[in-house]
Image (cartoon, rainbow, N blue to C red; front, top):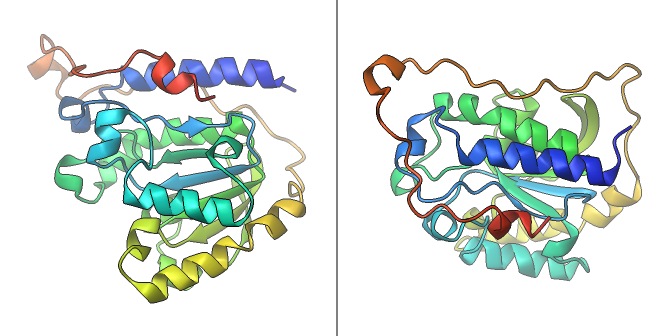
Length: 239
């Protein structure tokens, strides 16, 4: 079994790999890779959709109005950002905040699965449709699933998966905010249940391998965009 220190060092290595990632075209338009932030030993993990403009500029997840709402909801259950880990399905901002494309989700999901493997959360709250559908491997929408927890195997681990409305969807819709708040207040109850029973035989999730770039021959002399990339400490200092 890996110690917390070992897991943290492995998480840093995943972050370093993500900072240099060129698996999809978003690497050419991003300002910063938004890997995630918070407690690397957290029992509670939040997974959103993708970075927005503020996140892309600052290199941190959920720093806009949706992030402020998330902070408020955490405070209502006696928690703060330092108690949890927050990240997104995509680590790079899609242009104009459009929805993630399937090839982008496919290219980025290994980073997310490694984060889950190394942080070892008890409860994962998926925020909105994209992270919920990815981790459930199902197309059922958030409007039907929110507030209904289930045990899911993600990589080598069993977790309590708890879909929630995305805070951004609740900002201007009172009924959605009410539903989000009601669901959010059940999180302490789920954490109190402790980790679900783990699979008897779990194997380490494979290390990340860079897939072949179909455009490599055309762009082999083109340098990946690193404009505005922060030093590793900008995000790693938070976990």
